[in-house]
Length: 281
View 1 (spheres, rainbow, N blue to C red):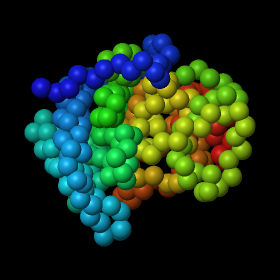
View 2 (cartoon, rainbow, N blue to C red; view 1 turned 135 degrees about the vertical axis):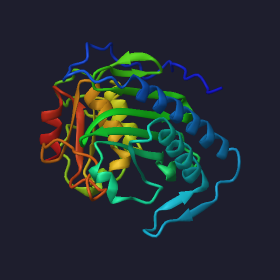
View 3 (cartoon, rainbow, N blue to C red; view 1 turned 180 degrees about the vertical axis):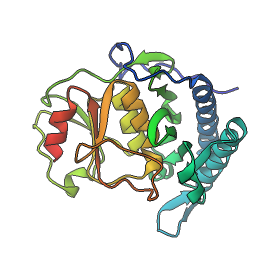
């Protein structure tokens, strides 16, 4: 039996408004499958934390663990059984150009923030996103150590552990809560007011999920991120009534030939997004 996500006494998000929409798309089964797989993968990852975590390295020098690979195999197998006609694009599996011809592509990071996982932190997440015709339409992000399950799609809105949530309506950067990595200030100038509350977060998927749920007002990355760590989070931000764009203000398209996005990104509630984009531009 999967662990039941619990509500935490802190980080209470605002009450949601109705989802904004395009034409309705029925993704109820897709969301249920993704949620179940994220919970199962999270349980697997917690199990690995009970033992010493052995660290290896990929060809590009990034670290990888057995937990990454087992979580990846679990999620890909589950998606392949449930949706055999869909393509799957994962950080931990060989890429295939055949996905570029597919309308529906699952884009997953089975363990986002592996360094945090290895260090014994609690910010690592499982990220499962679905892009249809290159648009991010569905996202599930699960934070196992806090049992926080963020999920939603563009015509359903977003929930956190089953409770409807939404991006905040903040309009000014003064006192806004902005999630970013500890390295952002070294990557370029940030014209943020001194009263901004900076949340230091490891996982990009987690930062985006927090924006979608109204736990933070915005998130930034001056670094160009890869698709598998952003698809689910961007889908959640959009489903929660927020905006997520590249640093030039353009929409983010997924299932591209190159896995890394062309620029860094900004995500926030719709009212705050223009100001945050200007502050990092």
